[in-house]
Length: 349
Image (cartoon, rainbow, N blue to C red; front, side, top):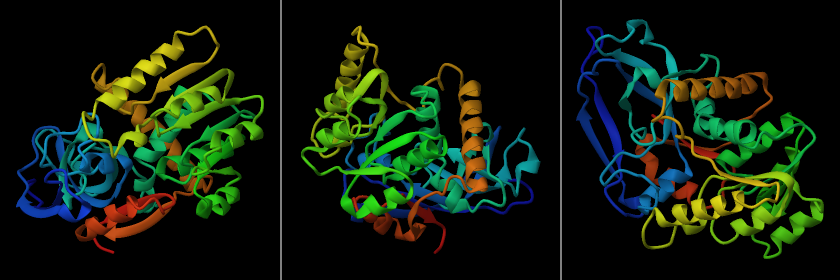
């Protein structure tokens, strides 16, 4: 560790294999000193997103082999720096997108992956809009390029990404139709969203009744056969943004197959001369091609989102907070399909 930082013992939550939430394990170990260009972050907030729910089942597209520490993103404070890393980073708060590893009291990350978080924004609030906020912002503005006055459909409008996406859209003067269970409809109405029951077998018919001329974009995290119905909602010039395969999370078999099938279907639609387009949103797209450009885009977009949070235009939806040592309960609640917003994990409650 740095000369001003004592040896750090990290507490980590480990996913040992395909287990129920109760099968998560806790381990502690001494962190090695950060290497060149690295820092040690003390976690102030992380969370549970859909990726971890898929990873528990061995269904996430490119998850590492078991065992590993889950945790897609976090907000934390730098407590140590490695050789060649700016020592003035110590004591400053940052967000980082890790894909795995964030369910830990401390972890080592590359300094290049740090994204500044203003001191006046609560870490749990910032965590709620790190991956979710960047994903929502990029899908809305970089992928679908939706404009003021247009109409969109958001499936799972009460979820972590969905609740952020609908607020960004409403702030921009975009009409939103959102699907959710009836228990969340009043909350969606309060956000200016027209709700539709996702359990209604005639859900897509209801949406078409609300937008008989079609919509400008559909944001679909479900995938599966119903992706065809999402595609059919689009008017000419509309965009389908697919960003998940929730429909297949409980299916046995190859975790990559549902995604590959989805890619093939989207590519087939894009080859049709019908004036509509289909995209699969991938947060990590472009990182291998140019990591510096990718990271700058992440930082720029999170800065935009955090600016809206600071202004009160975006209110992150925190479903509940759990201590790191109570991550089993956090995962159970996130998987219960009863929550609105994101389940957040902090060092202590």
